Structure formats: structure tokens, C-alpha cells
Length: 463
Ligand code: BGP
Image 1 (cartoon, rainbow, N blue to C red):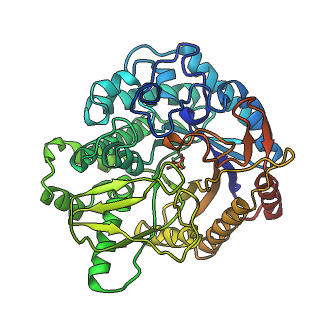
Image 2 (image 1 turned 90 degrees about the horizontal axis):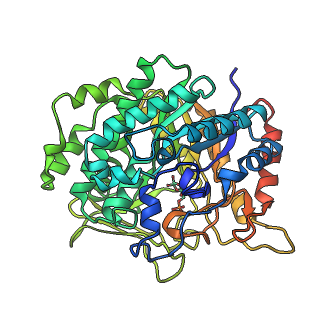
């Protein structure tokens, strides 16, 4: 029996720092964070957790905590600094060392090829709205497969085509800071083609191992059971989950989804002849699943599409989703939430896993992210994050319930390995099992790190 993967996850821009070292090119996030558009929490990932220099310490700590798997992303702008041109050998050597360090510690490396940080040259040329980015991605993916494919057996093409494009083109808080759903669908369409193209390159290259995509997925709930609420839930499922999951797993966008975005007036000219077969032949081997909460909706009533995210973690921030003619986000005032308004709802894990089992012939799943952000406090050099332990315990129990119900879950990774840059939320919102002092960069395991180590060791070879 292959061992169950117990570990944690990070992403390059959020933790590496070293933003302009060793031949790295600029990414869309480097430029955005240095610009006036970065005005909610005006900080950068220039240093972040300094993982680029401290990866050995971080991986060693993971192993000491009993973790046998580490998901990290490669910064495309390190490997191909301008997105399409010369390959930077220093970057490949760096990631090769990271992989070797994992293996030396008995930690399985799981590599994400793209986690939000696009080389700036490609971004400036239209980013994911430009089809040239698709080919550039497939070529960059092949460079990574060639360099690390002998030692990496789990690859993930793209992190969250859904959430990234929601932020970049609907909420407008990620670069390019657009609020236009039509443009969101265009970018997401090309991201899905890029993922499928990389999957095909992986298969054609005959590399060992498996390849997947990482999807943020949510069980959709309503507070009422009328036909109108059920219809809203159906639309929300298409909007949040199925536009990505059907496409990656079944090889086609759901017809109803495409009809609905066309009915919205979306310019569908981004669809080209031959795309269908690219998607069909690029289906994934496993689904990376990021689980944070459920999605509570109600019927759309009135007004224009309007999406907002609470990035301040206080009363000045607002979470709001109104999608004209689709649905609106609802709120249950009775449930517990973190300061950024994220509901603590552990059963989301069981429910989404069972839904995926039933919809997609029990595709293998790895939980590639699960965790919760809080403003942790250091007391006498210790971090007593009992709220995080409660959250993780609840979600892990629900995952194990789903495994008991026959779901093919093969791994579980906490977000995040150590504290890191929480995108537009800055550094106050901490997710790590390990605390990072962002002044000294000193690492301190939190209570949750110890709890997780004990939980893993209590599982033995079992799940
Ligand atoms: C996921 C991303 C991660 C991470 C996490 C927490 O959507 O893949 O990169 O950031 O969410 O989100 P946030 O940091 O915005 O609170």
C-alpha cells in the first residue's frame, strides 16, 4: 500500500523572498506589490519567509514534525525569467536542491508549476487573456519536467484557476485588478487550456509519476429549500466548482455553464477550433483539492454584479458576492468565523469529498490545502493556537469520515508549512504550523505543529 501523505504546503511568491536574486525575472506580483495599486496592506514578498535561503531548515522541521510530504510551487519567473526565452540554470539548480533536501528527509515533494505569479513580460502582454501564455506555460512545464521529473512524482499544473481569476478579474484585488466577469471567463478558459497542454506534454514526454490540477472547491449550501434557492445553489456550483473540475477531470467545460456565460453577453470569441480536443486529451490523474469552507448562497435579487473580499480582517472589510442573474452569497449569523469572515465549517470537507466521489467516478484526491488564518500571539516565546488545532482536527476528522465512506483520498496537506505572505492580506493573517518572526526570520513551532506531529504519529500506516 502506498503511504498516505501527511504534510503541508506553501507557494513561491508567498514564502521565498529573494525576489531579484540569482537571475530571477520579475513576476506580476513583484510589480504589483511595488506599485500604488497595492494599497490595502502595502507590503511586498521581497523577503517574505526567506524560504529561498532557509528551505533546509524548513524541510528539516517538517520531517521532525512527522510530515512526509511537502507541496511547494516553482516561480516561473526564476526558471524562465522573461516567460518565454532563456532558461535560468541557477533556478533549476535551486529547485533541484529543494527536491533533494525533501528526499533526504523522507519527505515527498509535490510540485505546483504555477501559483498566481506570472512572469511580468507575459503579464504585460495580456497575461492569461493572451493565448501565447498557454504555449509559454507548456514549454516552461516541460523544462521543469526535464529537470526534476526523475525525482518528483506528483505534479500540479495550476493552483486554483477559479479563485485566482475571481480575485484578478472579478473582485479586482489581485493583478491585473479588473472587475469584469467576461474577462474572468476568458482568462480562466486559457488557464484550463494551459493546464491541459501541460498534462499532454507530461504524458507525451513519458515522465514517471502523476499530474493533477489544484482546485478550490466548496459544498454549496442554502438556508432555505425552495426551488429558487436550489436553482441558486446549482448556478453557484457551476460558477465556483464545475467550470474548473468538469473541465480538468472530464475534459470539457459544462455545456450549461458555457450557455449561461454566453447569455450574460460574454464575448465567446476566445474559443478556437481544436480547443475541445486539447481539453479532452489533457485530463488529470488526480485532483488537488483546497478546502477551507462551504459556500452559502441565496437567489439573485437585484443590482449589478459586485464582488468584494475582506482583506483587512476587521469591520472595515466586507465579503460580498452578487452575480447578476446567477446567485448571491448568503450569511449565517449564527456560525463561528475568523476575523476575515471565513466560516469555520468542518463538514465542508466530508461533503465536498463525497460530492466529488459521486460526480467524478471517485477520482483520487489529495487535499493540497486546508488551514485557517488568525493573528497569532507570541506569549513567552510560545504560540498557543488552540483555535487552529480545533479547526484542523475538525477537518481531518471529516476527511477520515469521507475515507470511511469510500472516497479515494491519498494525502492531506496543511496550509501552510510556516507563516508566509497572505497575498493582499499582508503578513498579519497567519496560517503556519511554524511561526515566523518577520523581523528576525526566526522560526518557532506553534502548538498546532506539535498537535499535528502527534496526530500523524498516532495514525501509523493508517489514515
Ligand atoms: C488559497 C491559496 C493560497 C493561500 C490560501 C489562503 O486560495 O492557494 O495561496 O493564500 O488560499 O488564502 P489567503 O492567504 O488569501 O487568506
